[in-house]
Image 1 (tube, rainbow, N blue to C red):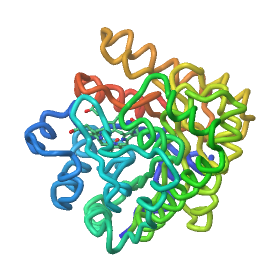
Image 2 (cartoon, rainbow, N blue to C red):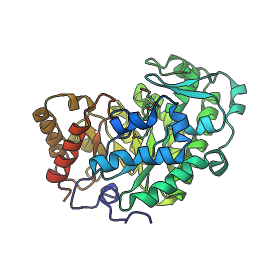
Image 3 (cartoon, rainbow, N blue to C red):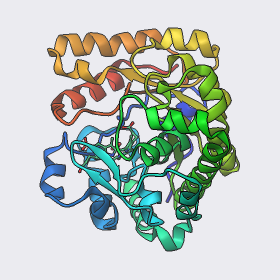
Image 4 (cartoon, rainbow, N blue to C red):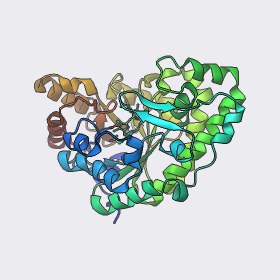
Length: 346
Ligand code: CP3
């Protein structure tokens, strides 16, 4: 059974008042949880993702522990490209590493379309398992945005400077757009299949879009993200669009077709709403590093996020980016309790 359409997360995503502010955390599943570390052992995260019983259990762990208002599918933004055989590993402490980075037009042939039922049956089985187990709690499906995925394919590994990515987009815009178009199609196919299997919302992670100037974002990233968001518009699930360091891009990311705009901790929510308009629906934005401060300070910062939202019904409480692996889970539990006790959407 899918969750009710009046689940707190879904109401907030539509900007409708509810009786509490929904809260979940990016990277709520993962290394910050002792029960995750115990289950995962040493294997590759991609193997865990390919094992539906394991991926299901890992997704459920934070929902049980914290009582959050959403589950997020345990997967990765490189799952589709791994599934079509592009050659990627996710190295602990590093991130995605590409065996043969994308370098020329010949590499386009390595990016064939995704057939989700054949290529990622384990993802769909995990989603179906989860929807059966989660009851009233919505499951968020997700995909990597074309720019962020392209940055890994082109650089070969995480980067601070994006020099190869920017050299390609400016040096060969036609090839760049062909690359992003293929990645958009992969994201659309993946998201559509997750929603068809029962996911109630879709988040597009353009985590590294903040590396771009607004002009470059509009020219080199936004069209493909807009294609993805348009490509799932008919499904009737909220589309959340998130990136880090995207204060100057919030309006463009909304205009790309998002229902909910994710805000990192650098832009206070009242300021974000000034930029986006009073009816905007926001997700965020407690600084994940503040969770390491004494509890009084964490509580104050949590209350500050709520105060800056000023009771607006369109707010999904979250961190400004993912949970850091060293985070104390007890602190996250207290944040959830505080948001549920003191956050009022109406
Ligand atoms: O709880 C959740 O948020 C759901 C699971 C999730 C993972 N990756 C699991 C994961 C989600 C939503 C992602 C998306 C993802 N993957 C993003 C976008 C979100 C963001 O952080 O901005 C990005 C950029 C990636 C690429 C990636 N995968 C990175 C940078 C890393 C970290 C590498 C490291 O070890 O520090 C990964 C690995 C990864 N993905 C882990 C998890 C739980 C940790 C590795 C492990 O447990 O072996």
